[in-house]
Length: 199
Image (cartoon, rainbow, N blue to C red; front, side, top):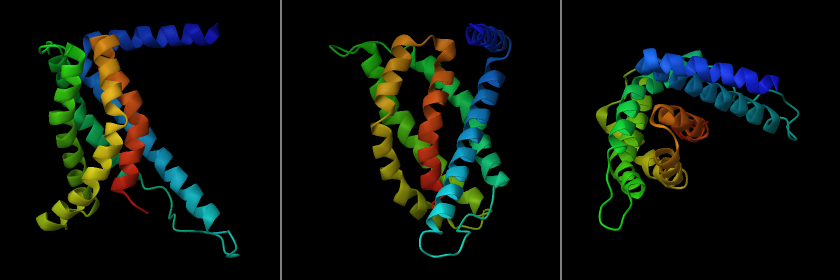
C-alpha cells in the first residue's frame, strides 16, 4: 500500500514536470538513467575482472582501475543531448499512418529501424570514439572504430527495439514514450556501453 502511494505521488510529480517543462524533464530522466547504466557496467566490469584475476593466480586486483566519472559524464551527456531528438521523433511516429495492409504501428517500427536506429548507433560510436580519445583519433580511426562496432550493435538492437517500439507507439501514452524508451534503454544502453568501452 505504501509502495502504491509513493509510486502514485511520484507519477503525479512527474506528470506536472512533463506538463511544465517536457524537454528538461525528459532530458534529466534520460541523463540519470544512462548514468546509472554506465555505473552498473563499470561496477560489473570491476567485479568480473577482480574475481577472475583470483582464479588460480594467487594475486588479487585485475584490470579494473576504479570508477571513471568522466566516462559516466560522457554517457550521461550523450543521452541528455539525444533526449530532445527522441522527444520529437516519437511525436513524429505518432503521426505515421497505415500503408496499405500495414497498420500504423508496424509502419512506425519500420521507419524507426530504417532511419533513426542506424543513425543513432553510428553517431553514438563516433561520439564515444572521439571523446574517449580526447579528440586525438583521426577521422579514419574513428570511422574504423564505428565500422567494427556498428553491425554487432545493430544485430543486438534488432532483438530488442522493434518489439519495444511497437509496444511503445501502440500502447504507451505519448508523453510517457521517452520514459518507456529510457527504461528499455537502461539495459540496451549497458550493451552499447560495453561495446563502446571494451575491456
